[in-house]
Amino acid sequence: MLKRIAVLVSGGGTNLQALIDAEQRGELGNGKISLVIASKPGVYALERAKNNSIKSIVLSRKEYESIADYSKALADTMENEGIDLVVLAGFLTIIDEQVYERFPNRILNVHPALIPSFCGKGFYGLHVHEAALEKGVKVSGATVHIVTPECDAGPIVLQKAVEVKQDDTPEVLQKRIMEEAEWKILPMAVKLFCDDKITVQNNKVYIKGE
Image 1 (cartoon, rainbow, N blue to C red):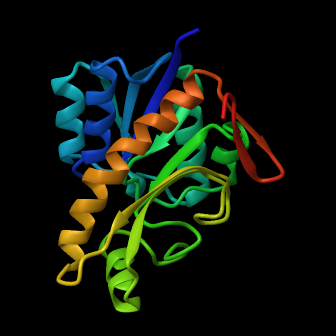
Image 2: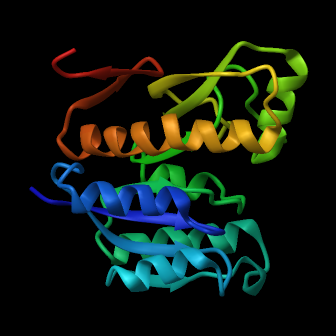
């Protein structure tokens, strides 16, 4: 049974592109990217959707009075489109529990660190890599997790470690983690979900066949 995927974006859409490329290589299993939702107009991720004939919608946060109104519109849109799996791919807009309740254990996010390190409120984008370098860690990486109302605290699906080099800048480390970890494990996690290989018990993810 084919599963319809919505990818939520706020910017350039590099993780969206990684998913599109994986789908074109036949690596999303029973998954199909059916919808891209952007939190603001004019972002390059919308071009990526257009170039690959994927339906896209702009749900601009500033057109809604509250987080609750925005979250309801987002959840309604995805339900109306028959979405099975939601992937947050650099989606920087705050949403509330309405979305999590209507898509329980069906929202994935990729975080550019090995959770529980360098995660939670304020840890996004380059801030994550700045903190890792400041701490002097020898490995960092990426984590795909199921999204819950608590920031970066949902069950972990996959993780991949990446070496931190002595002369790394936050930008260099960010690029390496994207290329070596994020763009690899996000499509893998999506495939596991779409092939019904994931179960969640006691805030832990169990993968069938492992």
